[in-house]
Length: 474
Image 1 (tube, rainbow, N blue to C red):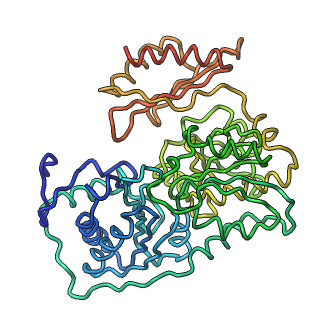
Image 2 (image 1 turned 135 degrees about the horizontal axis):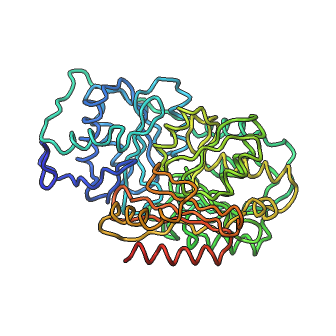
C-alpha cells in the first residue's frame, strides 16, 4: 500500500495526491505540476496503457508549453509516438481524436479549463473517447505516480509529428454540422472569450459568418485571465457581456470558458439563460434534425428540461453529473445529445464530446428559423423556480444526506433516486402548486455538499431552500 502522506518517486520529487481529481489532474503550476511531474506522467501512462500513438495538445496558460514538452519527452523516451497539436481548444482536441479513427490509443490535453491562471492540469482520454477519471483509471495513475517505481526508457524512442491544420478542419466540421444558410442577416452579437482558447477559434469561425457584426470582448489569449475568470456559470463573469449586449442592441451574447468546451448565453436583454434550459433548447433542435431519440440531462436539471424533451418527441434520461459519467451513458444508451446545468453540451455528431462553438452555431440556427427575440424562445420553456447549485461546507456529507433522507421520508416522496447523491420529488395531485424536489450530492474532491432544488414558484422555492439550508447546517 502506498503511503500518501509522504511519497517521493525515483526522481526525489514530491507529488501531491490531491491533484488527482475525479475527472482530470489539476493543481498549481509552476508548483505541484511542473516539468518533473509531467515527464513522469508521460512515462506512467506509457507503462499503464502501452499506447503506440498519443495525441497531445495544450491551452494558452503560461506553463502549458513547458508541461506539454516534458509530457511528450516522458512519452517518447518510453517508446511512444506523439502527434503534437500545440495550441488548441479542448473541442478542437476532441475532433482531432475523433477524425483519426483509431490512430491514437490515448489523448492528453494540457489545460485547467476555467480554473484561475496559477493552475494547470491534464485531461486524459482513451482512444475510444471515454475520459480517464475516478473509477476509470485515475486511481491506477495516482498509485503509479506516487510509487517509488522507476520506469525505464525504451531502447527505441518514439517519434513526434506536428498536426498543422486541425483548427481549419475543426471549423469545417462544426460549420458543416450546423448547416447555416448562405445568406445571413445583419445582426450584432457580443462574444466574450474570457482570454481563453476561443480567442484562437473565433476569428476564423466568425469569418465563416458574413453579415454578422461581432462585438469582441477579451479575445486575446492570456493564461493569467486579467479581466475575469473564464467561467460562464458564474453570473459575475457576465457583467461586461451584459453591458455590451444592451448597449449595442445585440441579438444575444455568448461567453466561453477557458478551454472552450463550455459556453453560456445571455439574451437580447442581457438575461443569463440557465444551463438546463439551454439543454432543453438544444435538445429540441437536435430532435428536430435527427428525429426521435434519447437525450440525457443531469440530475440537477429542472423538471422543465424533460418536459421540453418529451414535447419534441425525445426520450429524456436522467444522468449523473460529470463528463465522464455522461459520455459513458451516451455511448451505452445511444443518446443523440446531452446537457448539464454547468453548460457542458454533448453531441453524438462529435463522438459524444462538448463544443461551445457548435452550440453557438446551433443557437444562431434557432434564431434564424424562429425570427423572434431569444427571450421569447427560451422563457416559455421555464415552468418552475429553480435554485441553481448551492454549496455547503460540511465535515461529513454522507451523514448529512442520511439525515435529510430520514427527515423527508415520512412525507412520502413520489420519487427517490440515489443515482447521484439523493434526489427526492414531492407531488401533490390535488395541488400541483405544492410540487417540489431537491437533490444533494457530495463533492468528489472536498468536504462540500451541493444542493439543488426547485418548486412551482419562487416563494415556495425560497421557503424550501431555507428549510434545507437549516437542516444541512444544523
